[in-house]
Image (cartoon, rainbow, N blue to C red; front, top):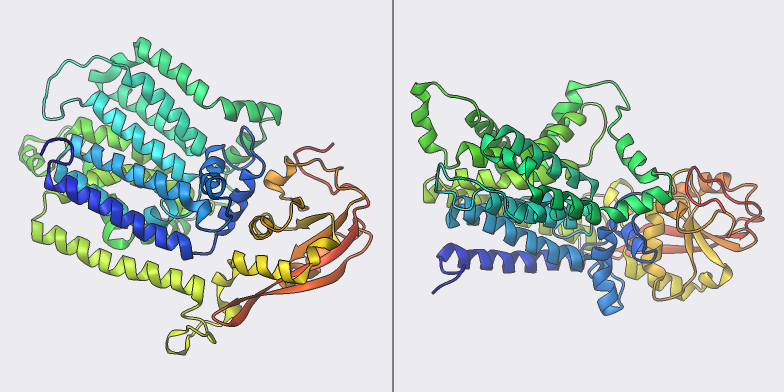
Length: 533
């Protein structure tokens, strides 16, 4: 049998991709939409060159399932992420296969398929990370083909090819997924600068074409930011500014949390193999050269992966010492480092790596499935119709109740008839507004906005003045209602409770969404940025 599926590991890779897609698809169908996901659904209702929070690709990946089916649900908004992640995993396998071996590629694929932060954060939830990681993987694959056309050969004469230009385009597309993609460009330049064999790339005409293609790819970001006083770039760069003094305790916590999201049996090894790869970059005493035979990657190959991975791994981990970071910020760096971990594990005895993967999978998969079952059915909830052994988490102490069953909220709106009592809906929370947008999508075309000092995208999807004179419906929760009413005093002619919409899980009310008739807006609600008039 010829072709890329000729090897048994190739066939195993296809099996892993299909099983992984099925597992992630099942999770995507049952897991209620996260706060960010629902908010990104609103991107699809306001298509633009870019957005305050992120570039445009998250809108396209979130919208593809909705546009194809006409159905708004947690499953359809995740179609793009499911498909992109499958493609990213396939590219990661092909990269490991090319650089090392089919066995190393398959182990890389297995690790990347099991690590929880990759599985859920990149492969289930519709986040900017899904398109980012797809183009990150494509960049890794093309770079491996460009710089190591035949990895087993040494001393070959390197000449830049058309792939250098393609890398410029792929880095730009990664930036269209998330601004983190800029780290790829930095890493590629750093690799070429520090490896004498590849410095000729920096004076190649292909690099000029690559720079042009990069500029074309990121043009939507530049156009939108130019139109809006560079607000998105200023907002994202401001996150790097310390918001408190540096804390070694916070740094340690950030490091440990990152390992937990990767899963400890993988997380600690990521850092170990990173240290091995860095050690390999330095000249070694003659007595230690023999030890290199136990390392399955050459210094140049390790250097490429380090330059494309370590800046994010270290940068965001160190940032955790002076501000809170999200686990997904550093995760693309670990994604690239999976290649070195897979290669290293391929040197283990077969019985060892098989047991290691099987034990890890036997813990990770049930934990994820139990988490999804609790979020959707409340299997740990007390009381609850589906509670195991009576449950132990009361809704008041369970943060997972903040996620809303969109179908239930939609039914509650339909039965209450409250939507007819206002011209537009608004919230004081951008994420609740996203959940609201998904819930009412099939019921009404009434616009939604957010009146808050932190309006994010809503500040650019309408003008501040267009709501004046229109009747509003405030959608909030009992915990936020008092503050919201005080916040809007003087802006609306009246604020009266119109409906309580209970959300149930396991047969019990776990959250209530409240709707207030706000009357007509008297004066524009102030905005810190965005379209004023």
